[in-house]
Amino acid sequence: MGLPEIIGTDRLELRPFSLSDGPAVFAYSQDSDWSENQQTTPSSEREANRVVAEMFLRDLEVQPTWAITHSGEVVGLVGLVLSAEHRVALLGYGIHKDYRGLGLTGEAVRAVLSASTTGPSRLFPVVMEPNIRH
Image (cartoon, rainbow, N blue to C red; front, side, top):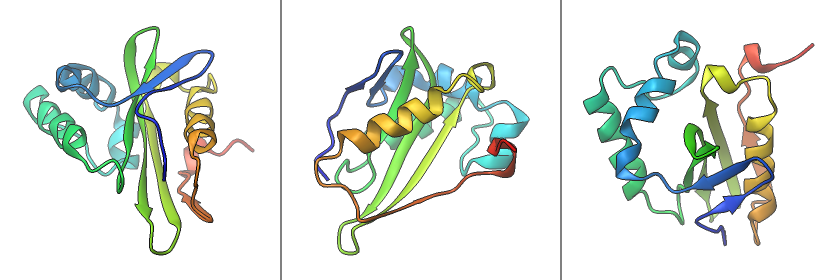
């Protein structure tokens, strides 16, 4: 898909997860909203370290995932699951509760989609009801 490892915006840096990001992942995933809306919710810092290691080892051609950093702090994630055969991508994201409502998630998603040189012809975002503003 031709995506860069590091993507910058005015307020964010999206970068690959580092093996030292476990404590931040554990911190932002302890919110009850997170566990209701995410596939993975680590129950301990050790488990968060395992989750980070899995993201660190992912094949970036199939499932690129970036840590969303704001002022140098990991505050969330944004990732894609790609199907090159069908030119389709599933978009996933999550952000620490203290950073919700600031437009950071949308900024991160737009940055990933803008950085793609050969993007999918179809994208399937999943938006949970609490994230829809009426």
